[in-house]
Figure (tube, one colour):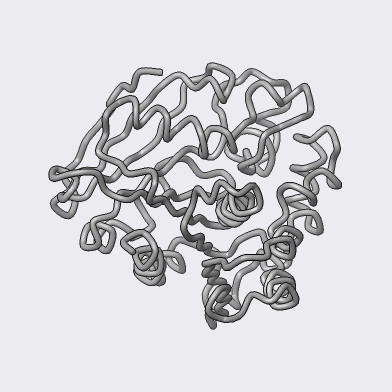
Length: 289
């Protein structure tokens, strides 16, 4: 799993680099990711904030359009941008639809045999990438790690974070999301993904990968921020109100789970970049504690 550096650019006194390696979690396909290291990484290990992108995206969308790096550099936080799915797995049907297959890995581990060799984005993000980066000797402190994302990636960030709390690993200190798919077992994007990737279909997905179902199972404190726009054309796919309701019923107050409705904003990176600074500073509170 040796890393090949494909490019490197100086950015806010730090470095944004693109890497490539052969991923065992993704069926021995080659995968790419971007990594921003702030200038202070030259003096020692820095905390890590993982960004998960949405449907049709790659490792480049968040790095190029998110507007995260200025504040991450100032806070001394590394940013890791994985891809959104395996690429070139050669599975029949993986390139037919924009919302399933390539570019739409949904940050789960597939259990349907057709997809289970390659579509293991959960393991890729939570286990493989930290192992590969640590083995490469990059100055990253994975004991101080948080996660955020957009749309499908917001779903990924919330469920990965909540799963780490429910399992007791507490791998991530905080989670945030822009326009996340909060209740995938009840909306077309989610039911399509769960029915295809999971042997147990939507029922398996609701139990393991639905943030609205999962938040009710978490008994301890959580650190979650969600932003969504009132002019989002995909709001019917997101259900942030259902997530907020489930969080409050479970006893998580405004300090623990904050869901903000942003008037007039849509689903795009114009929305994301507008509130990027808020999200970096939210995570800095926990990563630098």
